[in-house]
Amino acid sequence: MSEKREGLFSRAEEVLGLFRKGAEFTQELLRENERLRREVARVETQQLAASDEHEWEKLRRELLARIASLEGERSDMLERLQSVEDENRHFTERYIEIEEENNNLASLYVASFQLHSTLYLQEVLQIIVEIVINLIGAEVFAIYVLDEKTGALSAVASEGAVLSDFPVCRMGQGLIGGALASGETACSEEASEEDEIGQPIVAIPLRVQERPIGAIAIHRLLEQKAGFTPLDHELFTLLAGHAATAIFAARLYSQSERKLNTIQGFIDLLTK
Amino acid sequence: MGRHRILIVEDSPTMRQLLVFALKRLKDIDIVEAQDGMDGLRKVTSDHFDLALVDINMPVMDGLKLISLIRGEESLKSMPIVVITTEGAKEDRERALALGADEYLCKPIQANKVLQVAKGLLKVG
Image (cartoon, rainbow over the protein chains, first blue to last red):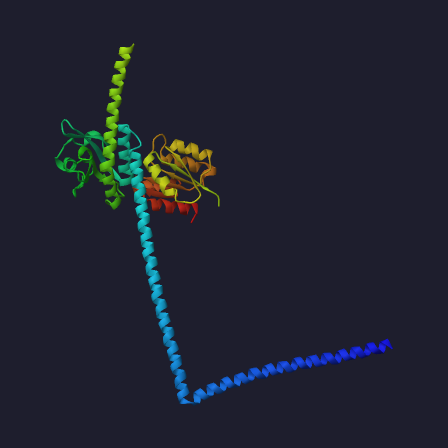
């Protein structure tokens, strides 16, 4: 009895399954039918437009307007791209300029820092020599110091030639003396002959405010150095003030140390 | 990548300071200074360096002698060496490169050029 019932249920399930599949198939057919109806409507509209001159013209105008609008957009985009590229180029140029300026400032800072790092005259002179060789790129040059009593300018440090090769100058005379008297860096077009100390190519005056201290005379540049750069001119200005102050301070310090030793000697003599 | 160590062998304090300024722009860099060739040799043999900048004209021991000693040492053969000098003649350059220098820069130097060469040899961006 129960086997009979189970067989009946199983057949009923099969029949229900068939109905469900039929329902799904019908729904699929309805969807396909709907899609085909829409397709037919679209084709009919296109056919109508193609057959009707007026509709066709309207469609053509619409398309032309769309093309014109897209062309306008493209042109705007190209203009914006060009403007962004120009801006980018401008920023790159500015970056390079700032980088160069930064390097120049670093050189000036180092030169200034070193010049004021000691109070001993020989060390100050050595630092000036290093700056002129390493930062300016001079091969033959001398540092002159003014004797205020006699007005003579004598070389006290040099590079590329011995001190005695550099002639003693007078304040206000020649390129070196003239530069010191005027306070302006003097340049000469006439370069010195090889192995000969003649006219310097540049004379940098060293002055503390209006007080003349000495000068730096550059006679020849290093082989690889083609000429002076804007940084060199900045260094000339820096040397004109800072090297002069450093030399002046070192000389004062040396004098005061000597005086202090003398006084100390007297005190020791009196108190012993 | 770890930190890079650079040795500057230069007798001029002005030049050393300028090189430190230029190289400090690199990231993760340790800079050690030596004031002549002998000092440089002592430092390069007792520590590890990824790059050495060497001047030619120095007291105690010149840069060329230092380069030849460095290249004679098996463990230092691959360490890049940059020469920075006032000697701009072609034969000086050739001599330094023949001894084992990787780059030859003439003074007065441009900080950008030093930085670019250091970046290239250290293979950093």
